[in-house]
Image (cartoon, rainbow, N blue to C red):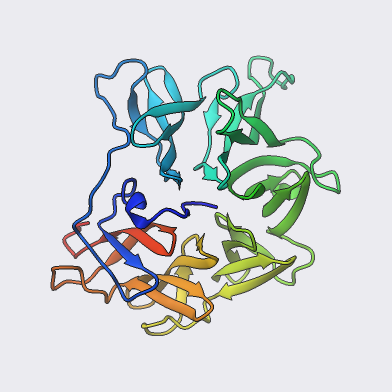
Amino acid sequence: MKHTSSQPASFLEQFLPATWRQTAASQVDLSNQLDFTRLAMTQPAASNDQLTSFGLTQPALEKNRAIFWGETQQGGGLYLADGQTLHRLVNSHSADFTQLGAAPSFDGTDQIVFCAQSQTDSPSADSRVPTLQNAIYRLDLQRVGAAPQSVLVTDEPLLADGDAFTNFSNPAVQAGKIAFLGRLVSQAQKGIFSYSDGQIQTVACQSTAEKETPFLDLGQPDIDAKQIVFRMQDAQYQTGLYRYADGELSPIVTAQTQIPDGIGTFTSFGDPLLDCEQIVFSGRGNVFQQGLYRLGPAGIQTIVNTQTPIPDSAETFTRFYRFAAQAGQVAFLARADQRHRH
């Protein structure tokens, strides 16, 4: 599960460059008087063990902690910050890892998963070029000093038909079950898969034989105890949000879905997040419509859109960027006016 937690929104605000928040249980509750806690900072003339830069992906948040990629003069790694101390969990320039991948994910039980690339002992066609292997790793934070354990590895026959993966990306985990993007050796197909108890299940693939319409592109998945959600583009180049639950794949928001508090239907979507068994997503429509929305038992509800007034201002929001959902609240980064103020 990505960017979700039982912690209140004030914890989210420690990590995101957001000025506004919204509470799902009420009308728009916006505030531009937020307190921020610095968890880590770069040092231009840093010593070898101080951070010089941060990764471009969002941190994973849970239990008053953040995990993120960072770089020092001696190399990079995966770091944990709790507001008091900074710990390097994984060294990306060690003998084990040559490159770290997309954003890590908490699973709610003091375990995280992440993608990384490592050098193997297998021979390559050119002996001067090392053989690299991509894998999804799991790290148990309760085991002090424990090394990450590989869960899924490329070039191994992991699927029932003997097929293997050439790479992995964007894993999300909840209660030990992992959803991830992977590319298969056969026909270089990209798909979304789930892994649990040693078994891999295909959620959606670019040319899934069981589906009447092949999929052209797949986005980053998110997962909770009941479902996997993700963005997908079909053969007609239309993008929609899909849910995989109880072995069934179904569209939940598409280009035929009416925009709440808007005009017409959605034209495109960002990658969705799961929060409190509801789906939070960004959507666009014609005539410069954009907003953040929540899909739950009552249908699609607007969180904030380009008609929402900015607190203490006569202007409205004009554009939305990154967002995170947590315990029924949403923190987001937005453009405030046409002069590009955020």
